[in-house]
Image (cartoon, rainbow, N blue to C red; front, side, top):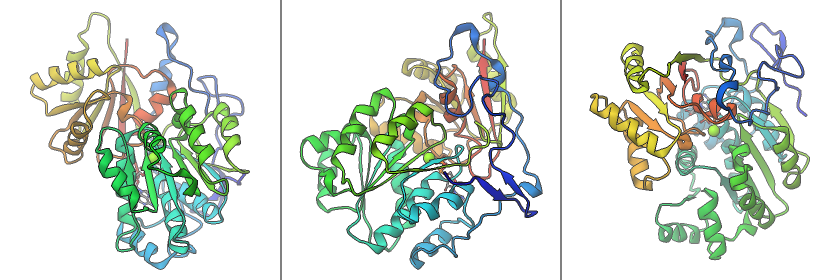
Length: 407
Ligand code: ADP
Ligand code: MG
């Protein structure tokens, strides 16, 4: 296990997980045992309250490496600079050199801290050195696959590297054509990947690099069988990388089966990002929740609000009501066709709507610029779900606000 010490600006060393007592937080667990479902009257509301911390000068992170000093391809360094990344984030600083050594890595860091580039940069470098390398990136949601491809394409401009996204709801024909061109990188969701493996259009034996982004979600009940099947098919001589903001001991035991002496690199000093101001909004049974939300939105001077509802139907209903009240709003959930989901997400990204009502389909991994507020109109099912939902705000260097409606 890598030492999690790093130097702050004064040259003092600090333990990145300092401040946590061994053996427990107030929700009764240290990191990674937050999958217990919230139920009825036993919710500890303090979990949803947390004052954001302003960055103190001495807290500003000083990385060990600069991108320029990393032992990576010159063109890639240029692409990183053109992408606007001045210096590595903490997880990038710690994990990129280890991944460059070829080791298997479990990378844990809070939401919005640059985990995508943490795996993309060393893997792109590897492909540039060895053009036969093949990378498979498996993620739980379609929009996340597309987002990772976008970041990949930005980092490999004019390098002649190729990628294909393999996701449900989009043209299979086009994806098969894409695979026939033998792309360096395949980014997909389990359902469509499995479909194309079964049709023998995707030969996993060629893949000697595998990334599970949102790893704990990928190893949840819903995905574990498929992921195990993929892992049995990909090359045995491979590098395997796992990333998430949440991870449990149970998941860690599971991954032993398909990783080789993984190095666990955790930058998590706390469960949620410091940059998110968290609070509750109390609603009594007499209140009309939509009216309360209306008031909250009117008062909060939000730039963009992502509002989470529990069900697809609930999301649509709430979206209709907000629309009737004159808000620029749309909804996203698993029952909407893929192209509609993409359109809605795009209009939210480009700010032609400024409220997006979503189910947990939008909770994991999505990096939407300038989401100022995440509002849990309905409670998330677990504390891990909460962490990912509110992690859509307060990303990179931004501050954010998370409000949770509590009965
Ligand atoms: P995570 O996967 O940890 O939630 P992402 O990889 O989605 O986070 O990155 C969050 C945001 O931070 C993205 O907009 C990304 O472009 C930006 N980012 C990543 N690395 C850097 C960096 N070194 N400097 C500045 N911004 C960065
Ligand atoms: Mg991510």
